[in-house]
Image 1 (tube, rainbow, N blue to C red):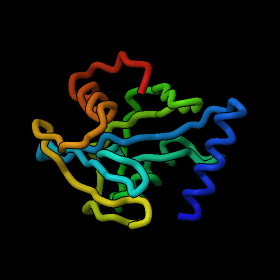
Image 2 (tube, rainbow, N blue to C red):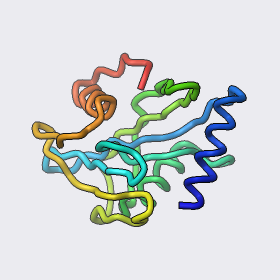
Image 3 (tube, one colour):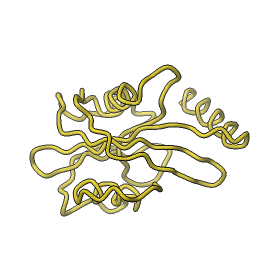
Length: 151
């Protein structure tokens, strides 16, 4: 929780000073036509796993690390599908979106201070409370329509 607080403060300072952040998100599909979603303890709704890129880290390394930290899955061969601008209040984030179909393990909450819930959801029955941006990113990847520039 302390780390999240520090990251949140850092993010706010950067947004005020005009320094954009760079993050990653993963759309993870299993072989049962399901997508993996998480609920954070500090944010409402169902979201894609992901987070910020650490200085000196590659985007591919960041998405692998974030997925492992949040879900316990070890992913391989993440495919970069788009780079999107996420403008929220005064904050400007760039999100690198990856499609993932290769992974090892079973989803399990790794940090109960950050992740409240995790689960696989059928693509034709996404959960109540899924964010509109999460729903849009899943749809864009499924339909091969990556024309959107905004999160």
